[in-house]
Length: 441
Image 1 (cartoon, one colour):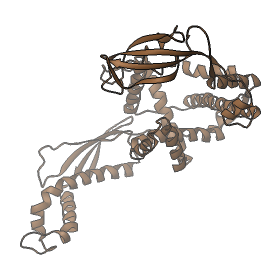
Image 2: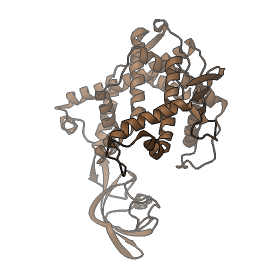
Image 3: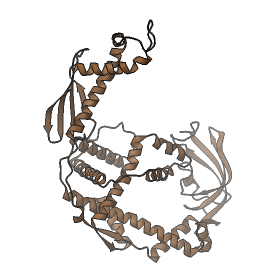
Image 4: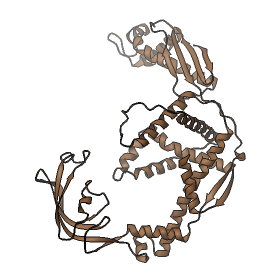
C-alpha cells in the first residue's frame, strides 16, 4: 500500500492511496481460506473444494468486500501514523473508474483535520459567582402565586367575566347531528384557560346563570378526531351557575395541599426552590463570563466545514424563530450572515477547547447521569415515558445530543475548580438584569 500527500494547506489534507492488486488478492484468499471448511459444492465433500475453484466461484463476490476493507485499513493506518483527527467523515473517491480484476486500486482521500488546541492556564481566569438569597418578600410573592393556583370559585351574581368559571350543560352538533364526546352536564369551565375549542370560551363572556346560548365554532384542521377536523359545529349551552375566582387562604391548610406539614414548612420549601433557581441563573451568568474569558485567551485555525455547518444551523434556527408559522423545512435556503459566521466561529472554537480540556481532565458522563437526563426529558411526554426512554436508548445520535450538555457542564465545573472564582452577593433584580443581558448579546 502506498500513500502520497497531495494537499497540505491549513487544516485541509489530501492523499493519494494505492492498494496493490497483490494485497487485494491476499485479502480475498484469506476470506476464502476462512470459509473453505464450511463450503460444499457438487462433486466435492464439505471443506474439500479446491482453492482455484473457490476463487472462480466466489472470488468476484468477495472482491468488493476486500476492497472496502483495504481502503478502510489504509485510512485508519494513516490516521494512526499521522495523528490527524478528521473534523468530519473523510471524502473517499476511487479514481480508476475503469478498474478490473488484477489492477491496483487508486483512491483519493481528502478531509479537514481538527486543529491542535493550545495549552491554556486556567488559573488566570477570574470570574464572579453571583449569590442571591431569597428574601421574605420574594417568598411571600411566590406563596401568593401558589395560592392563586390553588384558587377556588364562589357563586356570584351578574355576567361571567374572563377568569370566571361557568358551570354548564352542553351538546355539540355537526351538520345537525350530535357527535360522540360532544356532550356533558354540570361541566365547570374556567374562561380564558383555552381548554376548549378556539372561540368557545370567548362566546360565554357575559352570560348569566339560566342563560341558554348556541356557541358556533370551527374545529381546527389538525384536530385529533378526523371526523371533526375542520368542521363547523354548534354547541347548545345551558348556563347553570357563574362563579368568580377566589384565591386560597394562605394558611396551614394550603401548605398541606402542596405536601408541607404547615405554613412555615411550605415557606421553607419555597425559599429552597427560589434559591435553587437563583443558583441556576447565576451559573449561566458565570458560565458566559468564563467562556468569554476563554475566547479572549485562545486563537487557532478552525475547520471551515465545521464553521460552515454551525453557521447554517444558527441561521436556520434564527429564521424559524422569526417565522414561527413555518413548521416544515421546505422553505428557501437560509444564507448565513457575517454575524452568523462570527458566532459559529466562537461556538466551534469553544467547543473544540472544551472537548480538549474535558479529555485531558478525563471528564466522563456516567450511565447514572445519562439515565437521569433521559428520565427528566421523558417527563415532557406523559404516558409515553417508556417509549421515549427506549427511543433514546436505541438512537446513538439522540444519546450524543443529550450527553453533550452534561459533558460541557462538567467541563465548566472543572474549569471553575482551577479558576479564580469570587462570590458576590446581589439582589434578585440585579440577577434578573444580568440574565437578560445574556439574551441581548
